[in-house]
Image 1 (spheres, rainbow, N blue to C red):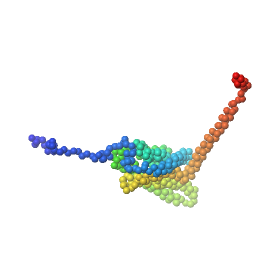
Image 2 (spheres, one colour):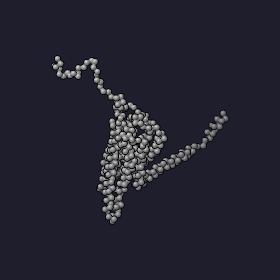
Image 3 (tube, rainbow, N blue to C red):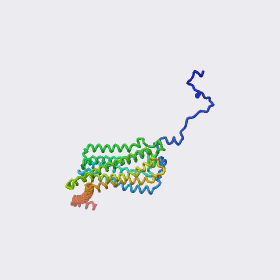
Image 4 (cartoon, rainbow, N blue to C red):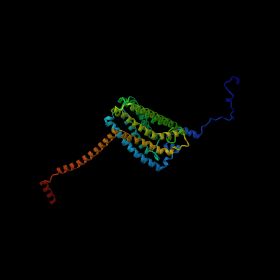
Length: 384
C-alpha cells in the first residue's frame, strides 16, 4: 500500500505522542530592537544612547548663552553681506553672487542654531521624532549648503583663474541654476534621515551623538564631507600655484598690469581663508561623527558634543569678518549701510520730535478766547 505513495515520507508519519518541533522564536529583546518606535518621544532614544548632557545644567547654560550671542551676530552680519552684494553694483558678478549665497547658508545656520539652543538639554527629550528630524535637518541643510557653495566657488575661481580673469564668464542664468542646484542637493541631504536612513526600527544601529540616526549614515556623511574638503584643498593649491607662476613671469615694466592681475590673487586668498576656517571648525566634528559611526567604544564622544557645536557656530561668525577684513570694498559697503541705518533712525526721531510741537502749536492756534455771549451765559448760569 505504501509503495504506491512515494511522495509520502516517513517524516510525515508521526505518532500523536511524538514530540513536535516548534519554530525558533526570536528573543524578546531582539524583537523589541527590530520593532519601529515612531510614536516614542526622544527620551526613549536618549536613554538608549546614554546621553547625559542634559544632566549638566552649568555646561548647558554656558553653551546656550555663548551660542545665542554668536547667533545674533551671525544673523546680523550675514544679512549685511547679502545687502552689500545687492546694493553695490561692483559686486554684481558670479563670484559675489555665490558669496552671497554662502552668506545665506550661514544665515540659515544661525536660525538653525537658535532653534537648537532652545530645543536642547531636557527640552530635547520631550521632542517627537518629527520635531527632532526637523531640528537636525536644519543643521544638515545649512552645512550641506555651505559645503556645496564652497565647492561651487572653488570651481568658479578655477574657471576664471585658468583664463586669468578677475571674474568668470558665467551668465546670471547659469549662476541662478547653480544656486538652485546647491539648495536642492542641500535640502535632499538634510531630509535623507527622515526619508528612511535612520535607526528607529533597529535600535542596535543607533548612534550616540544623534540618537535616531543610523551609524552607517554618520559614516557616509562624515566621509563624503571629508572627501569634498580634500578636493577643494587640491583645487585651491593648484589655482594658487598657477597664479604664482603667471605673476612671476610678468616683466617689471608691466607694473600696471601686475597691479591689475593681483586682484584674482586677492579673491583667491579670501576664499582660501574662508575654506581654511571651514575646515578647522568642521573637521573635528566630522572626525567625531566618524568615530561614533564606527562605534568606537573607547572614544568618549559625548564629552566633546557641546564644544564641537560651539566650534561649528564659530565658523558662521568668522565668515563675515573674513569678507570685511580681506575685501576693502566690502568693508566700505558695510560702513555705508550702517551709516544709512543710523541716518534713517535719526531722521525718524527728528520727524517725531518735530511733529509733537507742531501738533501742540496747532492746538493752541485753534483755541479762541470766549465770546461776550458765552461770558453772559456763564454768568447767568452762576446766578441761578
